[in-house]
Every structure is written in structure tokens, then in C-alpha cells.
Image (tube, rainbow, N blue to C red; front, side, top):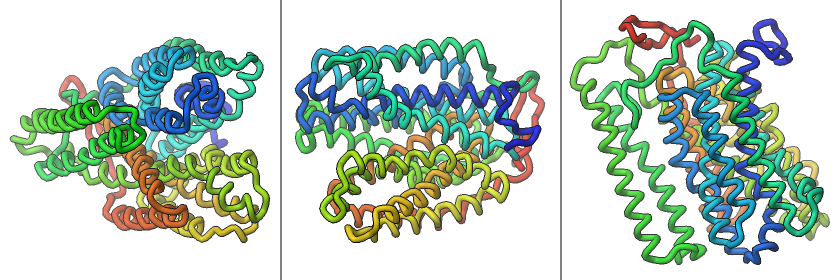
Length: 492
């Protein structure tokens, strides 16, 4: 990383773009998770009970799944510069709405809308993929994802102190509002500091917007099937908010939302068919083909890695407290600090996974990292109150490294499938990460922690088998310029 070609201390050319873009992602995650470390203060101000707190946490991720799909479409159409700047600017408004909410209903609506900023991750994947060649795209995407993802940890470390600095019972309001101001200011800075592609390069766009183009009838059906879990997860989230769950929604409202979700699914199926029917009715040249199975396998791999991370980060502090409180006197504060090691690994693990993928091959890297994550989760399932706390923490961090390095390996391959649809592919893969988080947390609500870890280990094993069917990106992918000539983009 210190070579002339990849000098992170530089702030020119592609390295400048990388720094500007991970900072944008960092800010989006800081805004998205600004509520988490201040939740007890917020609950006290608005007299919220435990059920209402849980509802806020559910609402925080509800909109992110469809948002990542939508943002993927927008970034491919309008470019990452305009899309990221607009997203950061718009995110500031529900952030201010949340900060100065006077009722639980206002708070809940603002937090639901805030879920949209969680889709910012998708935008930078396309931007970084445009600026870095195939031999460096893994490490670049890993730095982007790992350092940007640290925004949530930065919020946890800084916002409680900032709230105290503002003072009073409502200092949290100004702490959260400050993240909205940062997002608004940086949206302007980002817009005037970056460009979508290096000078002289073409920004390839899909021929039609609204769904991904596929290159075979089989892939068309495969694509439709792979959208079903996205809508099923939205249905599950609605069920959690219904009278059968936390009761935020009435029975009638729940059924209206169920209906809307599945009407939207059938509309999506219509769009997928409509966008693809014309070009699938004619033979497609071999150089323009790609296999949708590449996208589907990466969907599942990200579900097993980032989905697991989302779920484990949510439950780990309570797991450490319940496991070691009586046997070794661990307090809730200490448990939270010990559990934070899982998130901290993002700084080195994602870049490490991307570098490994660049150096040793995409398929082999993903295989080895998933195997490590599988063994790590199985080992976590064996932790008992008699384990030394230090060994439990080290085990957790080793598992975390493989999980997050696996995330880096997934997105080292995403930009190498079809350039003009990188945003949409990243959006679908990213959405599957949220699907995994919701699924694993739902499973946790029915089983013990050791079974929970074993379920993730078993799912990782299944995905490990599926990854053996992915094809190593080789040679070139073809994109068509506006004048009809074909440009070949190197993949290895």
C-alpha cells in the first residue's frame, strides 16, 4: 500500500477520490447510527418504554433494504458525485426532525426515514470501481468499506461526550443535529471535489433504468427468484411492528403494508421483464454476456458476512454480560467495551480482505475467509462462563476479522461483473446484507446464543459450498460507447 501506485498518504488523483468517498460514507454511517449511543437519554426525554426503544431500532433498518436497490439504480443513471451529494444533503433533514422530535410518533417517523442514508454505501462502490484498476480494486473497496463503516463506532465514541458538552437533559438533541449539519456541509464539499471518472474515461450507464439487464432467459427467472427474499424481509419487519410483534402498527395498517409490499413485488417483476424482453428476443453476442449467478452468489456471501456482523454487533454486549457477569463480575459497561472489538476490526479487516482478493484471487479468498468465519462462529458457540474473558474476546476478534475480511472480498468482485450496472449490483448485494441481519436477529429471538452462533456457522458452510460455483473474473468485460464502438475493460 506504500507503493507509488497506491500511496495512501497522497491526496491527488484516485487516492483523493478514495479519501473523499470513504469520508462521505463515514459521515452517512455516523448520521445513520447517531441515535444508538444516546438511546437511553432519548428514551428518558420522551418517556419511552422498552418496547418503543426496540421499535426505533427496527425502524432504523426497515427502509435501508429498498433504499439500497433504489440508490443502486440512481447511481448508475446519474453518477456517484451527484447521488452521494444529494443523499447526504437530504439525510440532514430527517436527522434534524429526529433531533427535535417532540413526540414518540415524530421520532419513529424520522428514524424510519433515516434508514435511507444507510444506502450511501452503494454509491461509493461504483465511484471507487470507476477510479481503480482491477488489480487494485479489492484493496481500494476494502479501505472504502472498512474505514467508512467506522462511522458508526465514531458516533458511539463521540456523541455521548458531545451531548454532555452541550449540557442539560436534552443535550442529545444538539449532538444528533450536529451530525446533520456535518452531512449538509460535506455534501457541498463532495460535489465540488470529485468527478465520476478519471479524465478521458467514459461513465457507462444502463440502457434502461428500473431493473438490471440480464443476458439469458434462465438468468431472468433467477433474478426474479432472488428478489423474493428482499420482499419477504420487509414482510417480516412489518410483522415485528404489527400487534403480533411490538404493536406499533394496527392490524389494518399491517395488512395494508403487507399488501403494498407484495403489489410492489409484482410491479418489480413486471419491470424486470419489461426491461429485458426486447434484448432477450435477439441473440446476444458472447462478449456482452455476464452470468447472473455471479451476483446471486455474492448476495448470499454478503448475507453470511455483513448480515452476521449486523446481528452479532447487536447482541454481543448482552451476550458477554449474561455469560460473564455472575462468574467473573463483568459489568454492562465493561461488556459493551469488550464487544466493541468486533466493530473495530473493520479498520483493518475489510482492507485486508480486499488486498487478499487482489493478490491471491477472488474465489479462493472468499472461500478461505468464509471457512474462517464458519469456524469462528462455531467456536463462539462453545463459550461458557468458565472461559477466561481474554480468550473469549480474542476469539471474538479473530472471528470478526474473517467475517469483515469476507465482506471486503465480496466487494472486491462486485465492480468486476458488469461496469454499467455496478451500482445496481452493489445495491442488491448490500440489501442482502440487511436481509441477513434481520433473519439472524429474528432467529436469535427464538433460540439461545449458542444455537444462534451455530446457525450462522451452518449458513456460512452452505454459502461456502455455493461459492465454489462462482467464476473467477478473467480477461475483459465489454461496454459500448455512445458512438457504438466497444471498449474492453481489464478484469485481472
